[in-house]
Length: 430
Image (cartoon, rainbow, N blue to C red; front, side, top):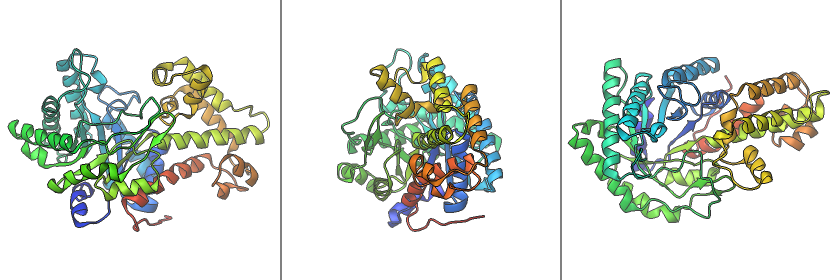
């Protein structure tokens, strides 16, 4: 499957519109939806974990890279999807989780994390050392970034060789949108300048050669740049090809590279297709998938409130509000405004920081209660029209909550699939 990554630049050179969706989520339902979608409609799947979600110390999910890989493989086995067709990736791999510490300490942790990712068989590794550590500027210059990235690439290669894994493919780049989206309303986003993109590529090429790991650079498949797409808490900036035209021409001089687009959530089919056409064949999506998952759960919470005696008045939403208020660390510095405004953001922000709370015991109990309340129930068509448009096929038959959630996530993945493999989507009902 790693050949899919290797072929992206060649496909672009030949004029073939082909890419791959990068599913960036650790939620089990999203992972199941991605694997089911791959089995039924596309055949290819790239699943990525971030340095904050998953690392050698557990991350906020409590999972190491080996744990995350095992989870994906267990779900794949359940779904009948071949393990050898799964590409695992690591996103933003660098000192970010430890940037409050001195650079020497933070980079030592980053090296241990990189080794854990490589040992667990993650084949696509995003080298992101652009952030400053204690006492350093917030954003580092290209040379410092490249030297730290090269250190991590060397660790990844050495670990892969010792453990018998395939040598990984690398992604690098310093103009990375903020993970999870911006915290403020956005009027527009300026694409990376062509000069900055060329400088980033040139500096990394020189530094990797100086450090004796030019063969690792030869396995670089993509550069992260800002194509001019982003989402905030309340709005989305969609791709404007004209504004990125000079940036995309950089690839004319780099035939072995493509661009990787972060924060493509909520773009829709038209902009996603244009990104692939213009040299951004790797489309990363994360918060949109947990946003639509939450959307479906809240709709079903309303349906159960209307339909099931003694279920109560939106107990799932109430449980999530209580969980977020009890532990505000994951949303408080991102959501600002009056009490009414922050309430709306807690539950409906496009950055979807509610996703951090689904593993909380009270949240899991509330979802389980909803599942039991609706299990086997025949939901009347008008209730689905009212609360979950497009889900009419679930009406008047024994209801399965997980199937409904997977269906909703797969709707978003359909747009990505149509963008990365236009005209090649297929349906496999096995």
